Figure (cartoon, rainbow, N blue to C red):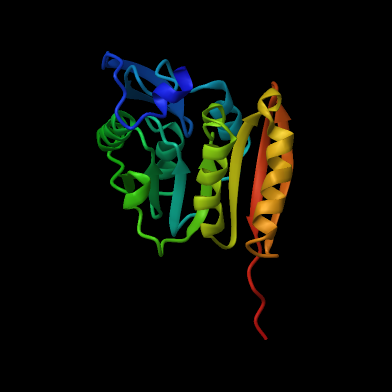
Length: 210
C-alpha cells in the first residue's frame, strides 16, 4: 500500500513538510521532505548502501537518477559532478517539487527535475543510479528499467541497489537477459553486498572502431 502510494503521480497523503539535516557527498546539508513520497524521514538504508559503494559519477555528460524522491542520489551526483547535467526523474509530482526545491536551496543549478515523459528521447546517460521501486511489482519495474537502462552511453555504467529478500538475484538474471536482447555490449554483475542489499552494476562497453 505504501509502495503504490509513493509511486502515485499525485499522492493524497497530507503534505506534512519537514526539514532534515542529512549527509550527502561528505557534506551536512538541510533538505525538505514530506509525506506521500519515498523515505520522507531521511536517506533510506538501500540508498545509503549505494552511496557508500558507488564510484564517483561521470564528471560530464548526462547523469540519471531513476525514482529521485526528494533527491538524495540526484543531489549527490550534482555535488560530485558539477560540470555534468543531472536528470532527476520521478512519477510522483510531490517528489519532483521537493527535489527541485532541495537542488535550488543547495545552489545546484545542474539538476533537471522531470517527469519521465519529459526527458528528451535522444539523451544518453554517462551514469545512472537508482534505488528502484521493487514493491510496485515486476511488470511495472521491468517496464521502468527497460525504458532507461538501454539509454546508457558507451563506456558508461548504471548502479542499482535492491534488497536480497525482494528478488535482487532474480532481477540480476532478468537484467542480463533483457539487455542481451538489446545489445551484446551490456554486462551485469554484483560488485557489493551489504546489510541484506545487493548492489547491481550494468556496464555498456564502447564500440571499437577500426
